[in-house]
Image 1 (tube, one colour):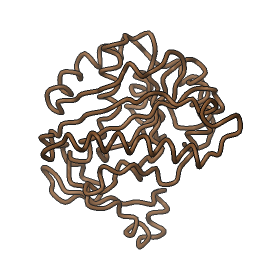
Image 2 (spheres, one colour):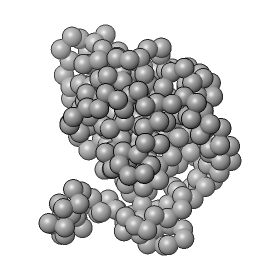
Image 3 (tube, one colour):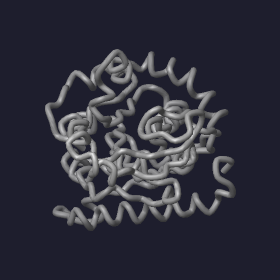
Length: 269
């Protein structure tokens, strides 16, 4: 998660009425187009919890809408899902809309406030590094060495709820993160504040270098919510952060491997 000035007002922007109307429209699309399925919702505890997930789908990831659609359908709209997001999502004409359906800027202050308020907070530690992982490595949990999510859970005194998704990297063919290309471009990439320039292939534009964004293919997407991890109970009052991170990723990798064994064909699932 990035650091920066928190905006307490972002948490108060959540609009349960608008969120309910939004998912009333999008839920049928997610269920029919992506044949979406979320398992293990009973593993989400009451009170604040940090849901840690792999991230899939490139510029148009479906993990949050799919998870939120099923969560709200089963648990109602009394408890918000906050998603820690890149600041770019918070600006422009759509920024206010995203804030109203639960997206908040990804910084430690916002995460702490949201967790302490009793909200379910979704974080993708791997960020853009993860969401653009090559399709041929789609079933690998890789956060790029980022461990800030553990400190966020410890600071707020909440459990980590590991979650994995499969199918999102089949919505198009992700060929490369393009780290090599970003390095070659040097000052241009630094101006854009990026270390990756992903290369993908999809419909209708074919080869895409970040843009134009191809339309996601109708890949079957399945998400699995795993039992919560109480860091202090399992690792003590002063846990080794790297040890906790390795454990979380190991639990997630095991679950992702199990989902992968169920999959028979790309896209079709």
